[in-house]
Image 1 (cartoon, one colour):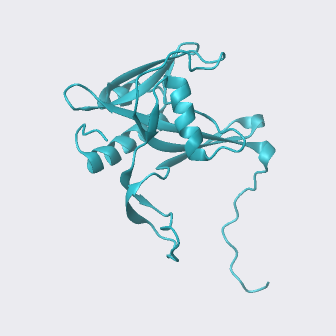
Image 2 (cartoon, one colour):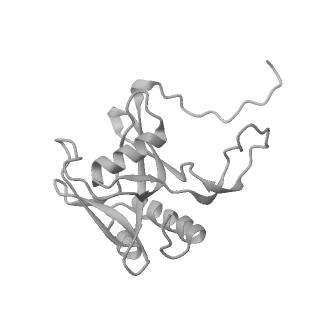
Amino acid sequence: MQGLPRPHASPVLFSEAFVICAGSVLFRSDTTGKWQICVLHDCADNIYVLPKGRKDCGESIEEAAVRETFEETGYPCKLLPCRMTTRAPLPRTNMLDQPRVVDDSRESFAVTLRDLGQKGTKVIWWYLTIVCGEKEEGTQTDSEDFRPEFVAVDDAIRTLTFQDDKDIAQRAFTLVESHHGVGRTM
């Protein structure tokens, strides 16, 4: 159709050129009521990261975030609702595509795109989660060698190896603190 404006052209990636991943910033409060974040020490590479992994076939991205977080940390968790700005419309409404503040959102709060070179692109959707049970042993796959550790938020941000993980943890804490206060649990 001539005369209609074309949307900004973006590269098209077909399924063999990307992998969908999901991760989370896992929170709990310590004995004094202050928030802590779980960081993973990847013992094989001696780096500190946030829990994340590939989405399985037939699994929702939210389910993948919760499952991967549990598998890599051993802590049962659930999505942590927060007030956040999102472009997602409210259910069954016809809304303009613009950012709006939504209470008790369980939407992803960030997405990262990692160029894997010849292997394609890794798309990682990030969620907020909170511990909802006791730590279980033996949840990691045979190829994983992570040591999960809950630390104070500032220490977690300093400890994380990669800047994008630091940025994600900082934004996650800003959302949690503004919605739930200092260390109030769900």
